[in-house]
Length: 251
Length: 251
Ligand SMILES: Nc1ncnc2c1ncn2[C@@H]1O[C@H](COP(=O)(O)OP(=O)(O)OP(=O)(O)O)[C@@H](O)[C@H]1O
Ligand SMILES: [Mg+2]
Image (cartoon, rainbow over all chains, first blue to last red; front, side, top):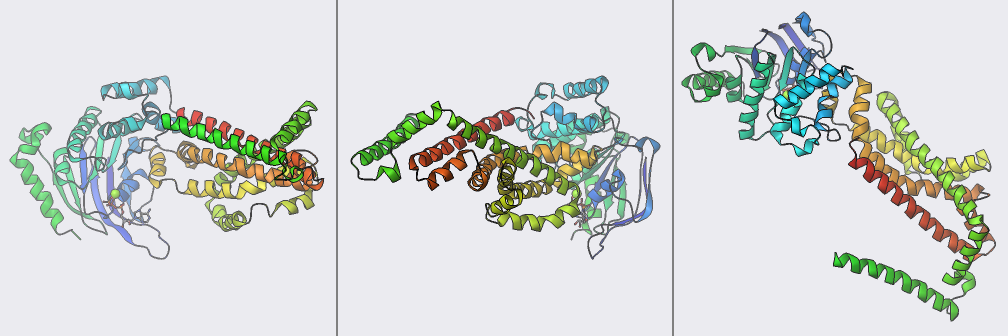
């Protein structure tokens, strides 16, 4: 669905031109859940911006499937929910539809159905400040989902939450993504989170960033459901594997 | 609650004793009422000017000049700030000029405007505008530029362009600033209009003040100043109510 081939990138800052990404190669399959993990500042957000087309690679190419061409096909969820405080939850969710002029009877209905499905129906006329951190994050996800993207980019969407909420919300969001049958790329600092959610983990090196290791995560194939993974020895095994790979990459 | 009532009572008491003292001092000739007038004289003058409608005419002129200047300051400064925000280079070029013009004593331009435009309503309105516009443009422009880049990124992730960024986050995010700048500009526009009337007015409260100072009609002068006080307090209250209404409503 997304393929990076020998991609290099640098921001054009005045004067200096620091290489951020160097010869990056990976492939993301349709329906998969991939986690990108790497030292902070290595260029993870930059990779997502490249997929979105906010920037063009300096060298190499990025191939996107045809169903990702055109606006609104790639949903991008940022680190904070950025719900606009002057809009109600429902109006916040319609933001993307307004921008893309897709506010029709069907899409409004879809928005309502997502709200009900994920427990926010009674808050649709509330201001964002009335919601808990986890609810806000769900609202932000619905804002992205309502555009019916084929690919979801999640840039540390849980990092603003406390640990317990984070466990709940991340499993919530995992289920929402699986239920809506989306392909997802998750950027995270949290090894446990990556192992618990992803079916592939791409470990990145520190800047300039390349692929250090690609680790396939196989719970379902071993008969373990996602709810139970955290307490299994296999979880610990994968955790150590990722930890090992990241060790040499600490600053 | 009780404390508030006491404070209100004390305020009225202070004001009433001031009036009383003033009247007694004038009656006992501790002060010369030719220069300092007296509450009773003020009241008689007020009734007299109300009955021959001249006071209404003056108030009407000052208020209409004020309203036109005020609307043009707010509208014009939002328009210019938006222009500078859309065309960043233009904004960067103009910013130091705005800073200099804004640090100028606010009334310094008035005589120049009067010389250029002569008498009538136009130069007075321009004086009103000149006092407030530079500061407002500067404030709006700087605040527009300080919009959270993550919010801008949000609009981009939802497929929006620069116009969407302005209409969906930059402008609505600045409505509280626009309202508070409106309050500041009530005072400034009134200052400008009164200075304009000092210099070029044939009618209006400012004209009344200058005319009475030249003819030593101190009662008229003091009355005009009192009316000015009342007008600005009234306008402030109106904007306060408008502000409350807009902020409570989901804009
Ligand atoms: N718009 C930009 N212009 C110039 N340099 C940038 C820009 N955005 C990021 N950078 C630089 O590029 C490097 C990688 O940034 P990026 O945000 O992609 O890293 P990250 O892995 O997402 O970091 P974090 O873990 O902190 O979120 C950093 O050194 C950063 O300073
Ligand atoms: Mg990042």
